[in-house]
Length: 433
Image 1 (tube, helix red, strand yellow):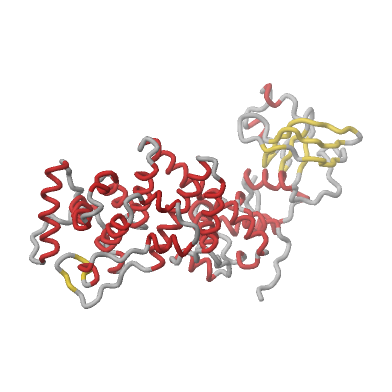
Image 2 (image 1 turned 90 degrees about the horizontal axis):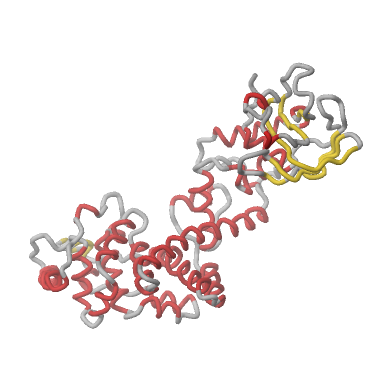
């Protein structure tokens, strides 16, 4: 016996939890009046689906667990008969009652099908079957801004929590060396999105303390980075790469370094300003500008100072080259958006973590304030959201929308999304202005 429109157990549990059904006239399958005072707490472990429910059945107020099934016959199909965990059920809530009369009568049963709107089921199925950019593309722009704002705050918290777990792992690997961890985080961001793993591997192959030794010799830092990246293994005619090559050979022998394979870098289908060579040159300039990058980062007090710290021009060679041996009239440098991506995805989460880890809330507040002041990220996902009428106004919003797309929309977790549940339960939507 199929439900039409299709109904999943997850949706049915959501309907019960959020009380998305008509409350008037509820009766058990034996005709007793039902009043749901509290649906209970959703149990995600073994045992009944909801615990601590309070339900008035006839004249008696009951308190205890509730079990949900799409069909009443599932009680037996799932092996609950005789299971001690289900011996104290106060109500069996089902979408459709399909047991013959007289069977299962020892457990009070409430059939919810007559009280659930088909429109709700149709909306959910529409989201599940959608092949659009996000399941709710047809409705997202008409969800009230207040819903979006509160949900974005939660999404940003989830995104930073995930990122900070990774940073904490790096800290433990680095014996709580914040400078080394900052170097890893910033380096990886310089490679985002496609070369992030390669940049992280580059940073991990070249300790920050080694680079600090050559802070007063800028060509040495560039030689170490390009050499470890495997980009100084070719035959050159230009003077500058020849100098870097000679420098790296000496440093490699002195410090017993082993370069990464050059084939690990991706060059195709990207703008020249995003080539890994340009990003390595930019990273080298940043590392030359500050002997202790993390310490300098903690000394900033405003957005302008942070931008000045991280926006450092590369060495002159890269003003007329995108790659070694290939001169151009004028090479476009990684722009403000590239800089903002580094700040948003590594610097500010690390600053916030430092404040949280050291119980210094001023750093946490500063990180969030700076995030609010930075413009939203500019990529195809954020532009697609803008087409739906929900373009974020600042970096905190774009971080939230990226989290929503990756971890909710792509996995069709609409029942765990504030926007998705609003669309499913909304009777009508206001027209777009």
